[in-house]
Image (cartoon, rainbow, N blue to C red; front, side, top):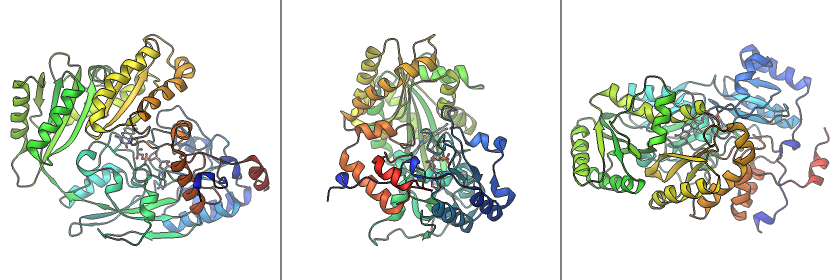
Length: 503
Ligand SMILES: Cc1cc2nc3c(=O)[nH]c(=O)nc-3n(C[C@H](O)[C@H](O)[C@H](O)COP(=O)(O)OP(=O)(O)OC[C@H]3O[C@@H](n4cnc5c(N)ncnc54)[C@H](O)[C@@H]3O)c2cc1C
């Protein structure tokens, strides 16, 4: 059978119902005052996405404190066909955790499920509940002489359940991979209300289809992650953080491959930003200053680490960058002399998104192409976009070593950003994504699809991929109650809709 020719699935937001007073009362009774609110003020911060551009409504905000409470919510919602929108830190870049505007969904926040259940230095495993904030897990791992090797700008906000559900990437993917490679097991409540007990410390487990892998990156559309067992790695003994100024992304990639060849796996981060991105951070983020004298078309932030007891990587990195300067590959570089300098360099990278928010709206894209193609893509796509959309300005930065760039297009200087975006945004998105697809790339490298990429995903995706996605969704969530309107492009014929929405 061809999946994409199969009968359409039933999961548009219009398939679900508003919770009636009986259900709301049952939820309030079960969750108590700490776990249930309909207060507009309390709910307000969680109804808008991180960028402040997408606003939703919800029938209630539910904050369960246990797996049993999550199960009770899902069972009640499934019986009544009420939609559930899971939410972690609400730092999604694609409005994945923002409920629909119709106000019929229940917003389910995992923030009260924030216990680290166990930490095992013997297994190198942490078991953390979905509501644990990433930086809290970092601290807990350090406490037992280990490290959780995934970090990103929203580490003080993003929670384990959200990071798993978006298969988050961040700044250490080069060495440790995305969330997918760090999750050993998952505990989740499925759309049926059943508890999937997949917490495991096993490194090897070949019992067929892997529900854990389906839930990673599912954006809350296949169930609610309540806890996960996560891989830890040895603590860092010492790190070297450097800032490099150079001419082109081609030189940057040459530098990366050179450093890797000389240091093995020591290079963990290799983040690129053009001069304009650095200038924007310096302009908009207090207590930041330029790390190098002079302007460099491209800037690279490099982090190399060494395990406890191994030689400090500062000396090696400094020598390698000296060689690169001698060869004319780089223009200038500085290596942080201490932790506070290292943190100051990282701040320049990690606050780019915040600095952009201050600057105003832009057409944003989170794209990947093969790493070797990225330097040419950056040059050619920037030129093509700026030619096609008069006076627009490309600001592309990010994880060059992973072939993943945040390719953002800003409005002309002095233009009304909102009006420009409303007029040109859709055309800019399509133009950029077509350039990416033409290079066998992805229009969502790490942020997911959410609401904001849904139409473009549906437009550009291979029908076979979409068909498989819909078949999986239909199999696990036949009622379509889990985060409808996100990730899975709807494909519902209207006769089915009117036949089903009878309550
Ligand atoms: C400043 C900044 C920098 C960022 N940098 C990066 C980066 O470098 N790399 C990167 O990958 N992302 C980045 N992001 C995006 C964002 O931080 C990640 O997508 C993160 O994984 C979201 O976590 P969260 O807890 O905030 O999830 P939310 O935003 O609350 O939710 C994200 C999605 O997961 C679902 N979800 C949340 N919790 C659960 C659960 N327990 N069970 C099932 N579904 C759930 C939601 O429904 C939604 O679809 C950045 C964001 C910001 C604001």
